[in-house]
Structures are given as C-alpha cells and as structure tokens.
Amino acid sequence: MEKEIYQLLNDQINKEFQSAYIYLDFYNFFEERSLHGFSKWYKDQANEEINHGWRFINFLHDMDQKVNLTPVEHSSQKYASVKEVIQGGLKHEQYISGCIRKIYQLAQAKNDFETQTFLNYFITEQIEEEVNARNLLAKYDLVDGKDLLALDQLMDQSNDHK
Image (cartoon, rainbow, N blue to C red):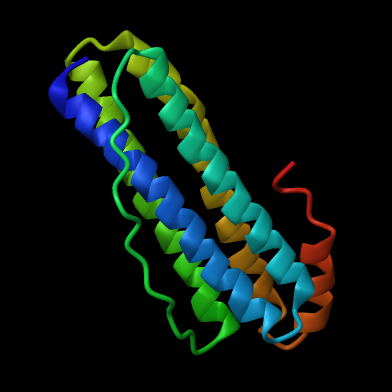
C-alpha cells in the first residue's frame, strides 16, 4: 500500500472516532434539554461512527498494515441553539465526505483498487449521512423551531441508523 494512502486511511480512523465524540456532545446537548428523540438519534449516530472506525481498522489489518492509533482530540462545545447543533452535524458530515473523497482520489490515481473498492461503501454512506442531516435541518426549518416536541417525537421514531 502506498505510504500516503496508508497515512490517510490511518488518519481516517481517528476522524471517525472524533466524529463519535462530536455526536456524543450533541447527544448531551439534547439530553440536558429532555429532547430524548434527538438525543437517541445522535447517540445512534455516534455508535455508527464508532463502527466506521472499526471498518477502517479492519481494512488496514486485512491489507496487512499496522494500525497506528492516535489520541482523539476533542473538547466539548457550548451550543447556542438546536439549529446550531443540527447545522454543525451537516457541516461535519460534509467535512468527512471531503476526507473520504480525498483518499478515494489518491487511491484512484495510484491504481489502488482495493482501497477504492473499500471506500465505495463510505462514499454511499456519506451521501446518506448528508441527506439525513439536510433533511433534519429542513424539518427544523419547516416547523420554524416552534414545534420542537413534535420533531423530537419524530426523531425518536426515526430508523435512519438501521
């Protein structure tokens, strides 16, 4: 495996676990406000990010590469509003999509077919993640932030993570 591809894949492990921390921050924000549907949704999102990290770890092992875990840098944030949290989720998913595309583009340039095949899952997954985040923001905007309890109930019934 090309050294630069390996490094990006290994770095992505950290980004996936860092994503889980971000979503746990969102979980805490909503739990503190007794918006349990939102908190459940973001808890599921955090667990999904942990699973993504495991996928990267397992792929590197499958490719006979050493996994080099690095500390996850994160400090809890203060959020001013529900909308700020939802917008932050969309922005973060767009960032992760860009990271995945960067690895894919390099793998394509280096004819690393194994990495391209592996990343196909994540490209599809990131489309779904961005759609979910945009839809949540659209729903929030639709109720103009006023019917938060109904939206919270909708989030509690969501099966976006199944």
